Amino acid sequence: MSPLPAHLQQATRARTEKADKRARAALTQLAKAAEPVSFTAVARKAAVSTAFLYKHPELRTLIERHRTKSGPVPDVRSPEVGTSSTSAAVRALSARLAQEQRAHHQEVTQLRKALEVAQGENLTLRRRLARYEAE
Image (cartoon, rainbow, N blue to C red; front, side):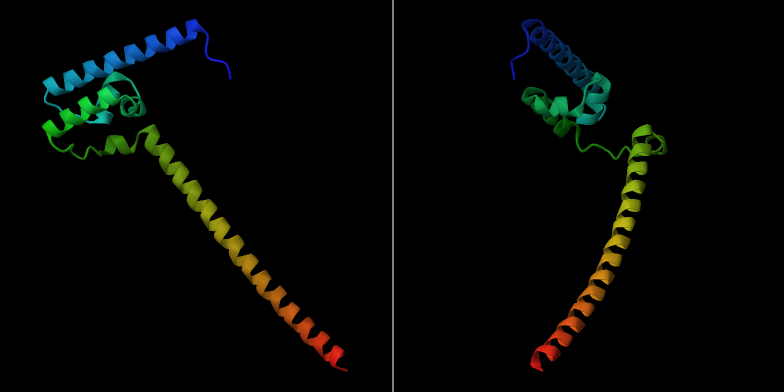
């Protein structure tokens, strides 16, 4: 695969630099406001992904340093968070997964029963064959 053209490399670098600046500004704002510092909080405030923060060692170190200064991050689960589209998607996927698990369990049960029947028939046929060969 060929490398990206120079103009695309430059655009990527510029986008990354802007995201880096937003993340640093968000971290500073959270620290000055004495709000809990976490990867999620910085990502939300800077409009970047948590993966972006984790992948950049310098940002990661800064966030971890601020996080230890501010103490443990409180549990932020609330009714509003439970009704977000992300939570709804997780619930929908969980329900679908549970349904598929039930279907697979039923299929495995049916296949085991069929296997038991086939093994019984096989045993019966072997016994008949043994009687005919003995004669």
